[in-house]
Amino acid sequence: MSGGLAVIAGSGALPAAVLAANHGAWMVRVEGVEAQNPGAPEIGARFEELGRLFDDLRAEGIDTVCLAGAMRRPALDPMAFDPKMRALAPRLAAAMQGGDDALLRLVVAIFEEEGFAVRGAHELVPGLVAGPGLLAGQPPDRTARDDAHRATAILAALGPLDVGQACVVGSGLCLGIETIQGTDALLEQVARTDPALRRGARGVLVKRPKPGQDLRVDMPAIGPGTVRGAAAAGLAGIVVAAGSVLILDREDTLAAAGEAGLFLLAQ
Amino acid sequence: MSGGLAVIAGSGALPAAVLAANHGAWMVRVEGVEAQNPGAPEIGARFEELGRLFDDLRAEGIDTVCLAGAMRRPALDPMAFDPKMRALAPRLAAAMQGGDDALLRLVVAIFEEEGFAVRGAHELVPGLVAGPGLLAGQPPDRTARDDAHRATAILAALGPLDVGQACVVGSGLCLGIETIQGTDALLEQVARTDPALRRGARGVLVKRPKPGQDLRVDMPAIGPGTVRGAAAAGLAGIVVAAGSVLILDREDTLAAAGEAGLFLLAQ
Image 1 (cartoon, rainbow over the protein chains, first blue to last red):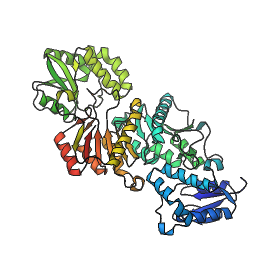
Image 2 (spheres, rainbow over the protein chains, first blue to last red):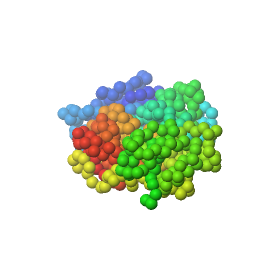
Image 3 (cartoon, chains in turn red, brown):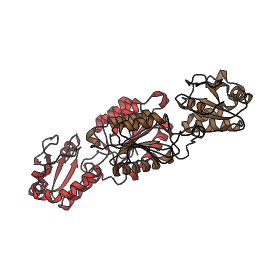
Image 4 (cartoon, each protein chain N blue to C red):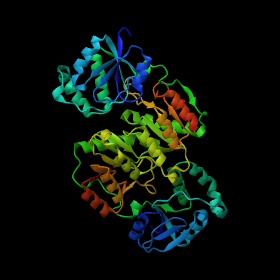
């Protein structure tokens, strides 16, 4: 990068990880978003004043941004829009009718139109994603490999419909498919499943991006909580797509898998 | 039918409905299965003695059977197997490794090999399934029609993988896909969904058979409980496949939909 980097910070541990790994990067603290700062210089911002944010970024020589962490859809005050935001409002309003994907794609497009490069957290922090290989636990047995294969096939079938980043299969039984409630809710559903229906099946969680998902701003992630949820659901292990699923708090995540006796495989 | 009819009775209201609509039909009461008898002559049976059951059926001039109602996989006592059951055991044991579909297909095949015709409850009781049309409520609006269309597309994508008889979509968001936990669990999941994720969406439940499902022994069904679950989940309505989804307790089901302000559409 010739110029500087700014992290548009959402909640969770990711923004701080990007800032810690990129000395001299700025943190953009958006009003109403809870974000942790490990000591980076800050730029304050409001969604209503995107024009001012673009100006502030340029004034600091920033030419690259990274949208990291979770951000809920903001409630916007149209009375407070700056001229740039007023110009963008019709496009934003239209995208807000669609899914989160459509909105994120538009936000990325807007930053790019303003001349900023948009980079993903995984491009800026070494080790955030895993290359192919067994990260924790014992290699999956035949049943677990077959379950992972079936869960992957289910996600592949749903991909064109923009549904499903995660699926749990146990001894061939489909125990759950992630919908908008997210992976934790999926694992809770599996944990609640009537044992008579489940018939002793353990199971495997497979997590992968959907085809066409912009990994720079919307990457599937697992963390220690995912591992604990999988353990509570009685699963045998977790399979993530190599290179395209974030492993948050990597050390804790791998340790949690080891403690729970779960395998964690990237493939 | 030239000969008699016997209903192999599982739990729920369906076996009694078949018996009530077919005067002179016999009820087969399987040991360990809770089943209601509206006054039909009974034949007692055990899974371990299928050979004796076939003989008893033939002795009563029965040439047609209907497997109706829900039946859990039995725990079998191999010491009590009769010769026929001993001969069938390897095939049954193999099928039990697979899904419920494989096991049901084998049970149907065994009855057919023994010379019995296997008929579906919907073939023996008029009005159990609905022809195309609006059964209750107001016609769905544009949003609900689009949601039904998307849910149907999701089920169609999953069909080849033998997953998913039901799906809920609300304002384009996929709120849930039925897995082995069943439709009631799916509706509870939708009801529990964080309103911030759901963003005010109501939604439509679509229920259809999977392609290749043997409708004689395994037909999707809805009933008053489904309607109440859909209402509790805030849905706008329910769409079922015309001619291939059982409407149990039809009068109560339609009344419940009317009371809750839900549409019920077969198409």
